[in-house]
Length: 289
Image (cartoon, rainbow, N blue to C red; front, side):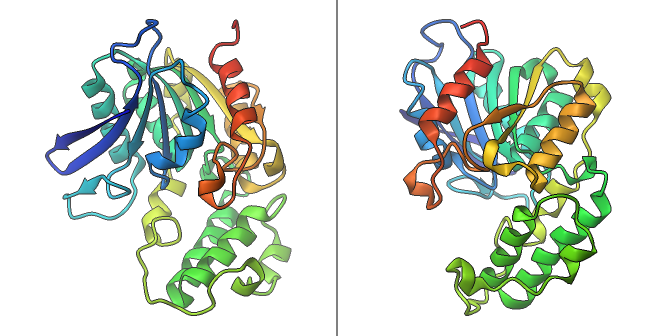
């Protein structure tokens, strides 16, 4: 593996390349990206693609990538231009792109702006709240975990986030009437450490969840778009966003093993099934074998 730094006017992006460039077999590089997950979150998954040139990437302001634009919010269109810059820097033509969570939303923005960059996009559990029939209520639920984090810190914010992302079905009055989530029940810290800069729980995440996909541009793009979700996510908000987006794009969603982070290994603290996940991902990338 080789590590590279890409200097932009307002950020320094760090990415890793596993395998040769140009690729040995003429296949496009396989780029894996998330948000707010950095490139090391894909270590377990990338290990199951030893035959491919795999690129992992730290988004600006996360991991080893430093932003100097004076901003802190994670705006999908900004991150999409960064991914475009990385693809250009690879110099290997368009890529196959596996993108998860907020990274999948960034990938949608990338295909919208630069459809020639990606041959196949596998968008795994994009938390695209704007596609839901209960989008306003889902936005209110997201406001809830940001408010809990702002008022009481990481433990309270993460417990409320877990409660939101575990809730099955639409966000009804019953959800909002439930007692505050207890951090101790999830093994989370009860004490407030005073930090308010968490990329997932703070206001920094708001632009990602508020992104509105350009369905017309996506359906017109030459990119093959696949939407997927984990089997354990069935009924939860990220399965519902994935299914709703797939319906708008006129595609059938693919069910992957495990949960929202089903491609991660033990290093994540909440491991999925990376070997089984990689097997399905291979089949999706190359359905003809």
